[in-house]
Image 1 (cartoon, rainbow over the protein chains, first blue to last red):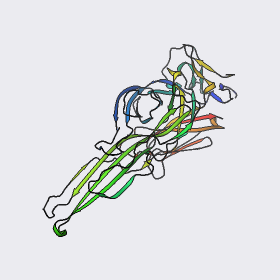
Image 2: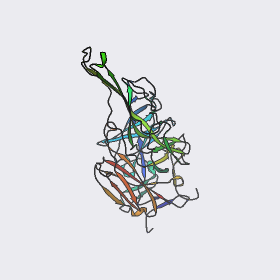
Image 3: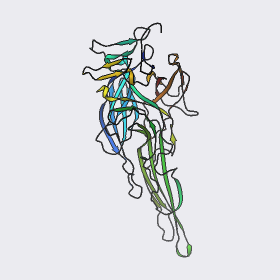
Image 4: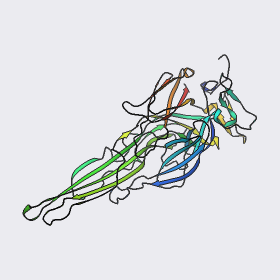
Length: 315
Length: 99
């Protein structure tokens, strides 16, 4: 090159130069409240009632620029995902979902921005690399530049549930039948990606949750009730439904990055109706509870880039 | 490492080293809802490029929020709504690896 700066690694690959901007540590996001739920189907107590549960922790950070957020798990056995990122002025909010219902061991969120967006430092020693415009920083050793130690594309498997296939709808059940026969837990469903730089002590990752899926099992029941000599029959109908909404989530293991799912919301609904009239002149009626957010489908099931780094560099 | 750059923190521990860096941030930009964007990065010629997407300001509850598609051809990164669907506002984080 005719001018500027270039640093390479041992393999001769360009790591720092005067054209590509590196990210720099701006701070850890502050954790606020949390919401824990869905260790089981609400309002249901029969078979296959268990779910994996989830806790949503809410974080904020105020900074210039657009932060790239890394999740540093405290409990590496749990699944993690940033399910929502929003901004108001210069305050960024992150909704971080982890599997399980225990609110202990929340993850830490490390945030990185371009060098020009990091608050000024009083540090007088170090090295700054500018672009050819002479003002835009690509690298500033004083404000903890991000060293990305691994990355690739990852995607969760298409089926989030431990019971394979779409649960679907069945008919022919007895009136008021309600017994879930589909395992909606998702701990066994993931794709793993090998990365020798991952450990379960210091590794943090960035991989926003994109995919969302709604799965539903529905059972229809029916009974015909007739009077003397088959006279004046009444129809009795019932519908039982279980639904779960999932978001893609991720887990770190030694040398492995897992892309899977975690339950975000769930519900159980049951309705029963019977006709009026009949031999005894009984009144009609119905009963129902619960509702589903939208029709069962999977959206945004696409590969997304994940990147990993060593959190201990920024502590 | 045999050559390169290491930066140490005030306590003497390693803060940054070119020895273990594998990906660099090439760009970061926000694409408005339903918009299409195409950027070319000549400085990344010969590098491998990947892109990370993060939807912004969309609720993860009862709405169907669609992320835009990202396609990478050479040094050009293109973002566009999924076919027939409206897309949500999205942050695109472009990474490059010198291979």
